[in-house]
Length: 462
Image (cartoon, rainbow, N blue to C red; front, side, top):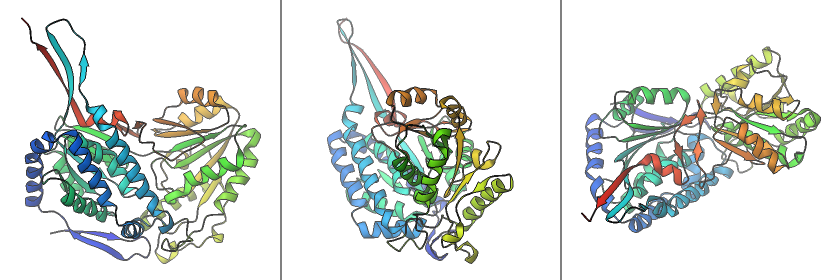
């Protein structure tokens, strides 16, 4: 039997070890989730609200353990760890509160003697495949609306964050009926087999483009619904009327929070040439405010990236850009850098003199690196922002609301921000275009892929 091993990026030590599920355990779990469907579907929406609220609140009630486990598993600074707990609860409660009205029958007027309406039914059993970078937030996007819709749920978390799945399962045991929620520690091969299993009715995947392709291949033999939340190379555009100090501060946070390991992290910044030098100076000043170090230290604001292999890939992308003419602005020597010791601590980096022929401007970096480029006007900014195979979010920094709306209409992206970035509003649809994904989570629209419409066309008078 193979084991799952979680190595902490803090010090390279083995933090968690678990046995992978056996074929027998997987089969029994899927059977239980199928058997649990009818009873859970019959539960009233009001009772589901109470049950799911209890479930999510129970899962994160131990704040100390929540923060420590997250820090040890992914390396996020302990001072920032509880922010994910707050986001988890915010999204969960928002999706729960909108469930009753979203799932209500849609009644239609008709001729006398007819009763017509559309009802949304659960799809069945939903498989949720969640990544390590925001393990609670990525899971809740599908987990809560799936349960509220009357589906049963199977969760598989990344090998880097197994304790998140275990905490959710422990909460489910206390708050949900048997056969409604389950988790399994599985290999990629086992997950592919579950995707191809007819007992799974929808697959929600959050992760890399390469991982998304693997899910698509596993699902190709069946007519099973799949939602993909994939990568990004998210751009920002700083117009000449932007408030520079606040813009630089917010964009630095959007680029470097969680060591840049976010699908919607800002990785490309385009700045109007009139304020280019002033913005660059302000942004670099914000970068030097970061404190790189042991994430267990409350003063640390930039922890390690998740693995040594990731750190080497990020460094390689930066070095390739520099060799091609990019100019680094940040002196790594002013930060503690421990990758030479075998640990994945990376100093942040800001690059100028970049071109769209460089991978640093085209491929997802997923690390504490941002490239800045000057543009002549709005037209050039939009063209550069759209020159990407990704399309998750884009942010516009300006005092002109009308201009932000007009530019947003031209951007090939799922979300347009004005004067903010790197945030998911649970009342708004979370979508990607191009290689950033397919499908929708959050908002009322996030319920659509987890339910199927059934039409009732009832003639009650002959």
